[in-house]
Length: 132
Image 1: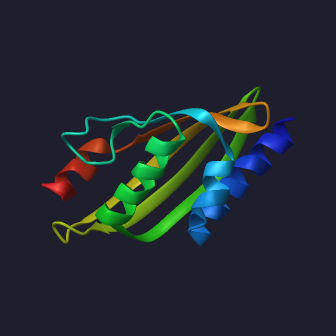
Image 2: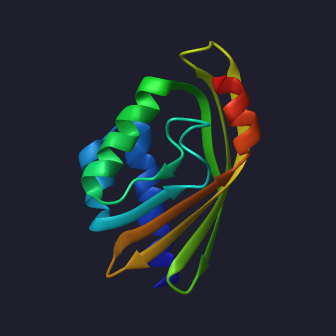
């Protein structure tokens, strides 16, 4: 099961890389619990985005907000129904022209072969600073 979970997550990242939103959303449960730790007032993509429709809105907001120069999921660690991913991203905030960069941890919870929960932990202070 753990290898299947890692493959599901890797396939979701690949869909994001191809900008294949249908494949990406298709990897999630309709009631996905999607959260980027942080306050929405500090950066427009922080906070909770519950359900598949809100996750679509989240990815539209990401595209409207950041030009990514690098998005690299690097290490995958399965544990029961979770997959922990260590990675890094770098980009330019469109509004300010400032660069943002952060190491991150993504935690995916898998239920019945789909992503049911997502959490991102990143350097929210650096990201908020690039936004201001």
